Amino acid sequence: MQPDFSHLLLPVLIVGGAIAVIGAGLLIVAFRAFAPASDRPRDLRPFILIGAVLGFVMLACALLFALSFIR
Image 1 (cartoon, rainbow, N blue to C red):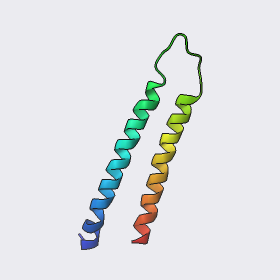
Image 2: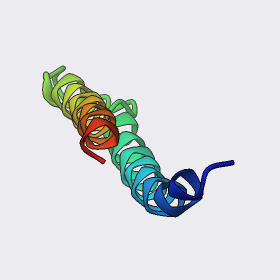
Image 3: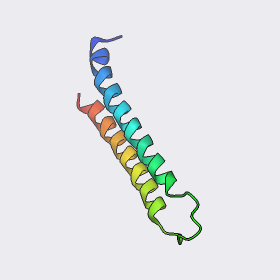
Image 4: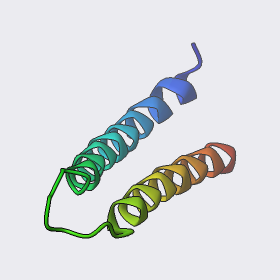
């Protein structure tokens, strides 16, 4: 294993772990919006929340991918 790989692996794991924890937390909040409510009309808020979370995760992955080429 090259020394640069092990040096770069720790920050990538830290950032990736933070992204995973934030994304999982936001998905829990978004899916809670799907909870059944008899008096609440259907709205687009849960779909917007899930789309925003998935967009955030994809953007973070793209930034990490771009960062791997810079170093």
